[in-house]
Image (cartoon, rainbow, N blue to C red; front, side, top):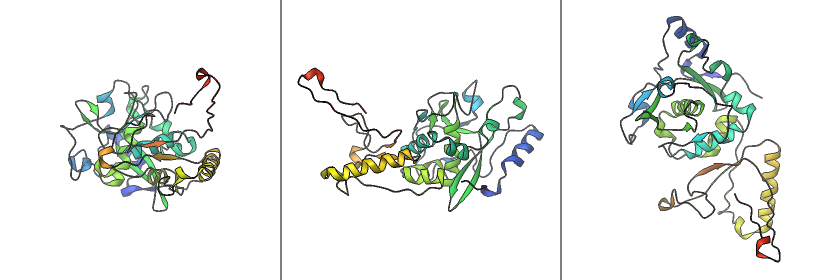
Length: 277
């Protein structure tokens, strides 16, 4: 399913890591330095940024804490919920995330052999028809000691922050991740083909038959191991508005399951049940 990856910027992970270990140094990426140019091209972050390594943020850093989960993630100050949703989709597919995060056990912190840690990680993305291996150092942007972009809910877990850094490197800077499409990131994570369906444009809300066909199509995709995401269109003044069902306008979501829910109406008010989202 997967082919070998081409080193991005001709940076070879194994060679760089070996050199750092031999020289007893931590990697500093010259292709994506800890400078403002890697953060933004127009709008700076809301505060003074300090680049910190995971060991400066947590006493016990890990790539994963109790495995990888689609519920691990927080967004941060950049409007890249589309990327976070794609990461949640990725976390549901072990065969994919193990490709995007290669040799994850070897990249993990080893408290028994701290001398083998070189401050370098690598991730793989599908770019213009080929897999590309992107190397990053582990310096992450913080404000007041807190990660300001995508990060895991567990303060000791860093896979999402490091993955986002590699993706930002591909894009040029973190600000370039502002306002994207989840489908594009899913393609970059999988090499698959994405299809976009607009429920509003195609007037699904007016046609029960189209809704039924859509559900069957989604169920087939899900059952066959496909990746599904969704988002709620919003006008500029509606961004971040919370709907009655708890969903937020302008946000992207990963679909973790496709189920047909039954709404039962009985003779008595107490017999009515409505499935929650």
